[in-house]
Image (spheres, rainbow, N blue to C red):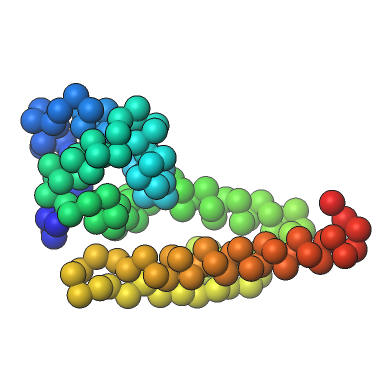
Length: 163
């Protein structure tokens, strides 16, 4: 991985040397970096109408070991820019709370806006691996926790007779 380089700048600098399929990926990433970080390799490949292999070649053209490595480098850049997805989450939490919903926030940062808006906060951490990229294990744990919460809420609603 290119340790200190901004992946969005790398896309701009390498764009002219990319293949046709890689340019489709580059165009998508430039337009939708916030969607890229939350999408699977297969989902982005499909959106760009390229093969999974082409997406991996794109990442390797930018000197990343793979798609996860590329996404891991993209996250800090989006946080610096105030990524749209984060703003949308904060907006959704505010609206939900304003409409009387009990809000549950999950974040890695105790000083984030999510912390201030949520009725219940699940504070997590993302340790760096020895290779310097963010581990996916905390994210998997977060997703599992959301599944448990959703299942529990569904079970309670079913018992009450709500749909």
